[in-house]
Length: 337
Image (cartoon, rainbow, N blue to C red; front, side, top):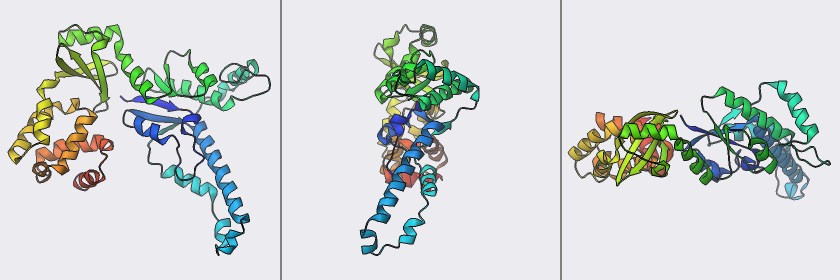
């Protein structure tokens, strides 16, 4: 089960007219590790910003004398549909996200009370009523927490009063960077009961300091890397329950054997040994294997063999987003889609 990260307006706002969402460098980092969630209030605010920008630029263009000097048909400019263009930007957005909206409007009196009392997320000053949109987002998040199986959500926020409103909720983790997300994400596994379960399953005695890394596997379960006395263990978990585990030494060498394979028989043998461990592979390991499926002739030439197709195809279907090479992506798309 993937983490949920909710983004507020200050992170993804984007008055520019070439993409719908802003903050793209940040979102590109998160999309590999989490489900990106954006409240509808934020979506409507982005639309408003774009609408203002497009209408302003359209008006400036029509009133600019160069418009006629260069022979641009004024009728085409006047007929440009701003709303249609904004919707197209939204429809064509390449970063996947979930939209959430407030369904229970009975919270409106609570919002009114917060506004009157100048409580967060409303500004405390007497000369401003700023905070209504943040209040809508706040109650949307609380409602969303009741609807999902996750015990908590991350909220990427920059506004101080908005963060103040969220701060006292035990199921909301406030972050303002990707590094924060990775740090607090792994801290969920520091629970003493969970560590006791690890010790019982592995037959060792670890502390939270032995938990080094986590990632989402091809089943969207969390895989944990444990380092203890020179050994590396990988544990597959779902909702804090241990599903299975292995010693990383059982398969790590076979990744190298596959990537550097010089004969078809070596490729088949390596895949046969890796297949039972496919749920433990990290994004970095998967990316290396997928890149090698094109770069290594002894994988590429037999990629349609049943075992190779099943193994590489499963990795591609679940983790195609880890591929950065356009040629590799095109090759695998043509092979498996």
